[in-house]
Length: 277
Image (cartoon, rainbow, N blue to C red; front, side, top):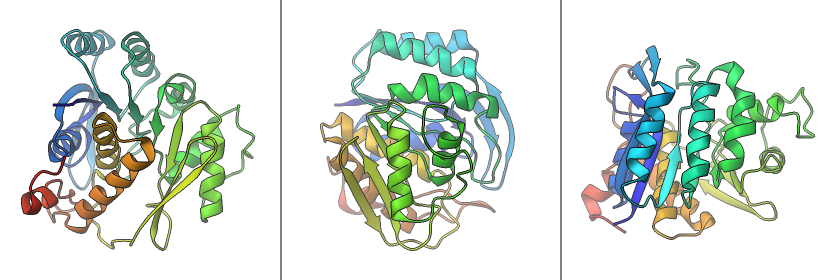
């Protein structure tokens, strides 16, 4: 059985973060492991508080996982501080897992900042070059472009509205050092179109937009599904295609739990058709 590691924050409401990642891994038939970087007190409506795990314990968690067996892919989510990023990057360079999917989580669904604004430049410098696939949504893509000094993008950039804009953003972010960048179109209008770029070729992934408020954990789920498919041996474009189909189904059948943005249904397809590996 393939083994996939999530490195992220813990969501006590179960819809996002570590909890969403482990559900996604199970739905894809891979064995999930986790390293918690932050404990987040949140529900479907709001974030109440965050407590970061110490760098020493982050290092110990990494050593505990990697010294005991092979990791076939890594998904990285919430990274709250520069110190956390530096600590994690050092261990990733030491252990060199074959696939690293980085979801640049900057804000919770309700807007609460999950990455310190002062850490964005550290993220670009330290974490982005370690990404096999980087998966920013449109606001995150804009923030990365605006914050980087290496990109030729105008600092006044404040919107990405068209497919051409998304391709341009993907090209600029790719120049910062990741192998692939997937700019997700969930914050755009019309069909849900995502753009993957490998430095030479653009790949487009389109699904009908599902009008629902229950989208808590969408980014976590998408990036975890990509990591699971990479671990299973799929090339990046096919891994994204499979993950796109999975997350679309999970959104379509999202659960109306809580008073805010409900969680996705991570097991809908598996409950009805069995495990597809």
